[in-house]
Amino acid sequence: MMSRNKTFNIDDAIEQAMHVFRGKGYEGTSMQDLVDATGLSRSSIYETFGSKKDLYLVSLDRYEDQAHDLTSVLYGTGPAKELLLAFFDRLIVHNMPQSCLMVNASLEMCDHPEVNGRIKANVARNERAFYQLLTRAASNGELKGNPDLRALSQFLVNTMQGITVTAVTADRQALDNIVAIALHFLR
Amino acid sequence: MMSRNKTFNIDDAIEQAMHVFRGKGYEGTSMQDLVDATGLSRSSIYETFGSKKDLYLVSLDRYEDQAHDLTSVLYGTGPAKELLLAFFDRLIVHNMPQSCLMVNASLEMCDHPEVNGRIKANVARNERAFYQLLTRAASNGELKGNPDLRALSQFLVNTMQGITVTAVTADRQALDNIVAIALHFLR
DNA sequence: GTCTTTTCGGAACGATTGTTCCGCATCGTT
DNA sequence: AACGATGCGGAACAATCGTTCCGAAAAGAC
Image 1 (tube, protein in one colour):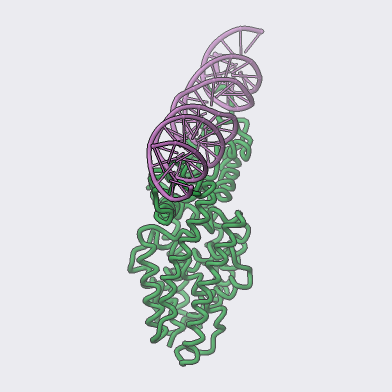
Image 2 (tube, rainbow over the protein chains, first blue to last red):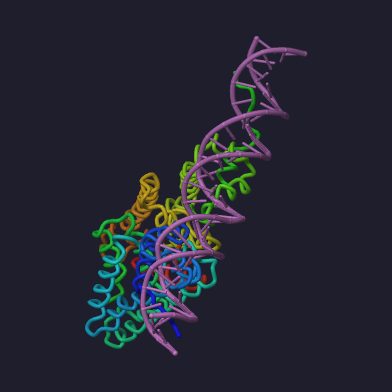
């Protein structure tokens, strides 16, 4: 016998919280920031999510969900080079205004086990996406030489993470230069 | 007619503060943390440095000074490949316990102009170090093809920054894989 | 030894932190 | 229509934040 329903949309609240965390980091975000951004009252936030950290974890999960849209490009059809260029283009656009929440979390919250697990899951998923693409590319003869595909996947993830940091200070041209060189292993 | 000298060593205090900031970030570090780490009283810290942020900026400068020791490897003599491998080895060792203060600052404090300027200076210095090495390597015929050395320098800086993020979750083997692939442009 | 200037520990500042709690408003249920 | 449970705004919580201030201790200058 429930009597009243929430007047706000939980998903919207998470979305707003995620943006704040992404922009200001965990420690840099205050509860007041979250109240302002979501439009909810403190009590509603605590009742719904439990704590600031819980809301942060939920925000990480939301971010991870949306990151799937980005990596989905890598599962497309066509030449590997085209797919990778499209992927990195989208990555750069995504990170030019403000950087990646996951990378942010890597540096700020790496010693919190719940956060660390999510980071590792994110990295592993990216690595798998690259690996899948590379095996296909290899069998199509799109790769120079006979590279270690697992190592190459790790290299591409590293390039990704570098770009989210580099994007803070560099201009678009520099980022494109970086991508072009990183993809030299392609025929 | 000065009457009394400081009983502490300012350089030591900066060193300790730098370690704290590196480990916990700017927002994550409290004044109490700095008091504990340096052994100074609050008043001494404020009298000597001005504010928490001022002490942070001084810590960044100290970090940058020490970073010179790392890049100095790139100015050595011998095959470019050896120098770069030695450089990345030292970079990895440096970043395995805890990540780079500059990269941390890039993500956490990028919108503070005084911080941003220092970050850009750090990136520019690294880029110059690579560029210098690459020009020498090019004239020695150590490079495959005829690459754009400026772009290649940017790529190496990006690889550096990626490694400081990747080092949080990856093991040593993965990092070595990444370096090996990143240096494929060498003959 | 006295004077004078600076250092520095620690108390205190107001502001803000994350969190809790209360009471009225709201709405599904009977 | 009355009940009863839930939602939620806002006041209040203790703790901690960065910062200031004051008084006693210290030490070079005379």
